[in-house]
Length: 399
Image 1: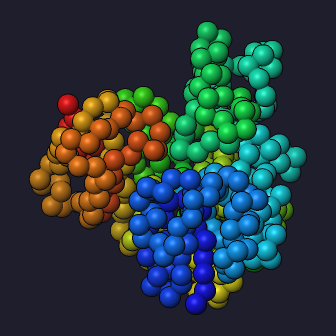
Image 2: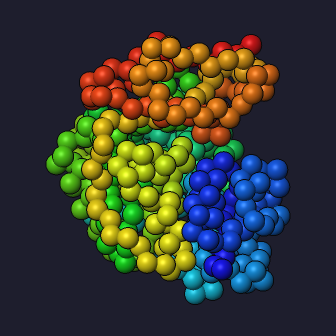
């Protein structure tokens, strides 16, 4: 029986564990939080921090695992690559992953290789950043180089707001380094969804529409998604070509990717983030429902050097959306109210992660999600109209 080590224990790895079990694979999980819900589904758990690459390597060697992956868990991605490389297991090159997982290094890589990229600079201290801000014109974005889930990200419109944004970014940076970059004004919706390559060939490239809640305490935390994307086909084609070029330049081989991209007001297509892992917010699960392609199974097969079924770009069976359930204030969960007619017609799946009386916090990052709704629509107009007026149909009641 093949054994796979999955780094982390969030609920997003549960479908990965279930799929692996369907495939007859023994699943081991690890992190420093034994009460994480994902560990309840694995065959074996070890209390080892997923950011300690030497301890994870020692564990993987001791257990003689056949593969390792970090799904929807950014802190484990570079460690998974390190362990795979040291043990001769399938995985992306460690140095390439270090570039992808560090916003500072990634921006420099894009610039050095002729990709569209915003003006950006990384800093190790508040003092450095305060001296360097004169190189930028407001608005700008300030964020940690290594955080996930939109934590520590702030748009800054004036010098008076800059120091507070720096404090927030440094607070959420694992390495103590932040990046400042030009704010790119997007046209239409940005995209945040999953892709897949086999032997350096991009075999599945998906794009979606990503929406935000302007009333949330962090307006850069994604609040909903829809498929297919309404981004112009020309821009999607350009992004696909550039993703393919990036994969070949970094020799990424066979991997799943969470890709953030957008078209901006200058008419250019930008690759904003590429992380060699499945995305959070159930993105791969949504794609399986929307187009029938099982990226989770492909990810497991790739990590274990198993044959991967032929794949092609998605063909969607209708119009699909996912709404990220959240509260815009701190309190105690009481009820999820959904318009009955809307629920009967459009709600395909409801997944609530909290119970009545549970403490919930305002939506400052993806870690404050309290559940998801999978929605299916008959036409694009109905879907877009609903997502743009979602508060008419759904409300989270707290007290």
